[in-house]
Length: 340
Image (cartoon, rainbow, N blue to C red):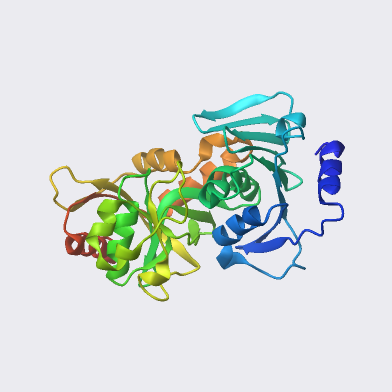
């Protein structure tokens, strides 16, 4: 990381006595510094289950700085580079070991993957938008830092039943959260409803929990009376869904880790009837790649691909067409798990 960036960090925090928060995420320790109380609270809420003692040896350091109108931002330390990913709300580039992320209207970040250091310059007015600070500013670069340390995110729900782990990869809106809620009501345990981390375990892949609050749309809330009190944490143009704490659904609903025994691709059934079918390994791998953030950074693509290929080889793969009856859904998943 350029010396001037480190110097900027020291100058910004000189005399302020920042109170960092430390998180042990499945053996990878992240320390987060923030110069704004609301920024700190956003990450504390996001990573609350992973809080650990502050003296833990740090693998990743992440600074959240409020962007000043005439002050520096990430572009001052990253002048040019190769664009790796360009989406409407996120642009991601590299120059050697440096990475640059820009989320228009939210903030910009420069990071050194090898050093495990990232510095975000957050736009004024964003601090109160906890969801956007955590998911749009913090998570994408932080996930890349975790990938260099052997932990890989998958856009998926992860559940466990009778010691067997089931991974449900899928894009937003495919029904992962609704399916997760149905299965929770039928005795399943949850590792995450939208993002699950995976790492190699010698015989495929181990799922690692990331228990965010469940994000649910109004249609899902209508399915369950306990969700009637679901509330939005804050008005946020990037996150229109309501958020429900798992403890409001069922106590002790979350487990920490589980081997991945079954891979299930959920699809909303056009005819409303629940059914499932086996999927071949080649087809399963080609689809799983779409949900594994594999394309964002070539530095970790080879290791990431090998992990996904091992997961597909070791797990039984299915496609689940989800109908309208929650009991039928749970019964279908029970049969899939029993066959694993």
